[in-house]
Image 1 (cartoon, one colour):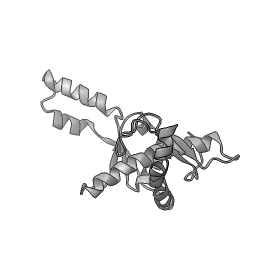
Image 2 (cartoon, one colour):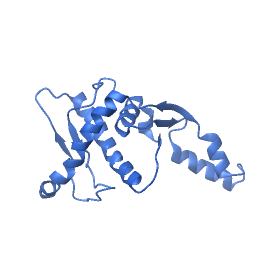
Image 3 (tube, helix red, strand yellow):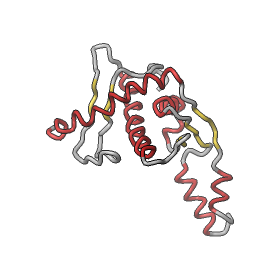
Image 4 (tube, one colour):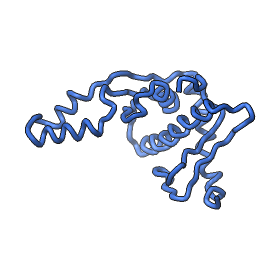
Length: 170
């Protein structure tokens, strides 16, 4: 990941490597790479994969916002939250701050808190979760990259609808 290009990719990857979830729910979709040239490197492709996955997340964030949910920042959990590079890409694409917690394996932490509450080790699951869920780092959007991603996202949102019928034939 340290060798990927610093700036937004000119590639687009539709990361439908398994059945898609929201917003498409398409069990027959397939992945696609658009924009390959003879000068494309594996590092370009790797960055485009991170971007494609994040574009899919942005589709969902936009759906929530269009339904009236105000989202001022996002919290990153799981293994991907350990990558500062990917968190910066997410902040830039989402154009929102990304908060990474001290404990990125939040599902495991939540299970431990619930178990501890069940055996009376903790008095309150909510209080304990609040005490143990500390923010380690914020990733603020880079204005220049975010402006590029706004433009690229408008293209990205057209890829699945344009390819869906063809992808289903593959």
